Length: 558
Image 1: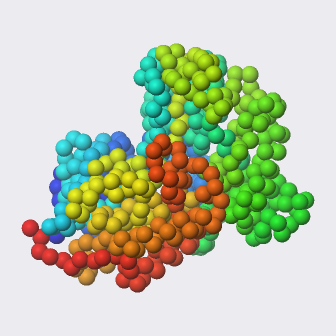
Image 2: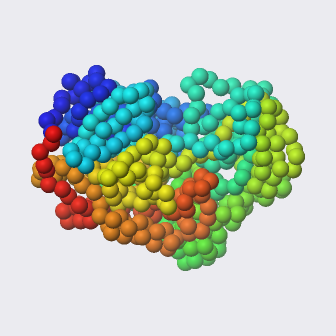
Image 3: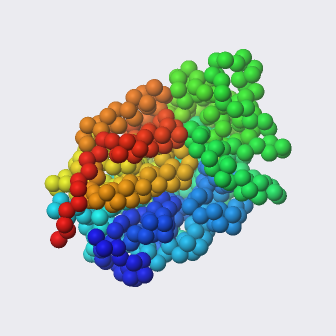
């Protein structure tokens, strides 16, 4: 296939390319830059939004903030960019991350190869030509040899199908589809449905101004303090000066994340001991230090907190005590204490979330014991018959994680195989990157990858590097397609399941298992052994000449 120059393709919304990338979040941008600038391929990125940013474009709700420390939440693809850009806080806001994304796009001149406001409806593989045809909702078509799905693991909002959902006469919003215009909570009655990460963040904003704020909680989560703060003078410069060294070090950590202690911070004890190797007094001191420091160091304070029920229970009990310290009403406290094992659901970072329940304008409503049965013209009706009248409903009900961004498209592989049909009993992949019977289609952040359990940018860039190196290797040797064998795929799924079964992750109900989506098959969706293990295993496959894959020799294209 002849390469098409970026300049020639720049203004076209249809055409033939070496690679088509779906999604202009961090993964899509990294893939575009590497394929275009370092490898000389013609690339087209298709993006539904009006600008790049992925999850940070769509999740613009008040209070949205990253839970990875900002000094690490950046692309490593260009050293000049990581030196030039400056962050302002320990945990960056959505707006600052979106500004950073635009800075990257402008600095690397990426926009010329991105079609914005373009949503993909289908992608179809042609067995005869070993190529893909991508079609958009507007009817544009793109042809490519290699297809990269970078639509994101948390990008398809989940809106529960409540009876009467279209009857409500007030304002309705979903945190994952927040409008660009300002939304005011001042003086309004707001019902917030959902208390996951997005719900915790937006709750703190709603509670500031709403006349009445109903927080409708189905499941209590484990929430630990972020301890966000402005970056101190010299702190950022010190990290930037050590970026090459630090990036190598971060890749040795389970979550590829770091906790940078400052002289003013409480000491953070490294988690190199079992929770049972210390006395109760020592254990409390370690937890106290991690709690005071903030961030995800708490769940790594001991080696077995996420591995055994006994250790998880102790961590959960510690958090329950902190809730009792923060919330005055004992009845509310009991509702806020999670009945799940610590870590089986996503652990959430917050800033004074529990304290909002001491405010007169905030009411916690337990909709597990008293479910929502209907949305009405004026608000919501609960099973008990209680009517909650509000002016606004905010859905913080999460996403169809890991698979929703793919199954909402009509993706057809070899022999007419449709991806959503292939995954009807649960998603299956090889390495979290490719799927049997879908040749030449690569996935970034897909099921059975480690993306959602690590710094997602680091995980994305590792997968981008793996994919780009695979494409180059294949082209150099004259191969036109690559796909996993069913046996290799089954073995990888079993490996991920076995790794998860050795932890507490499978002991609860969460989007890690697809449990938040009615009718979705229950299957653990992630590789849990940590970023270094995932990186090592995937690279070993490549080093062995792409073991577990079927490679087809080039044939003359029509």
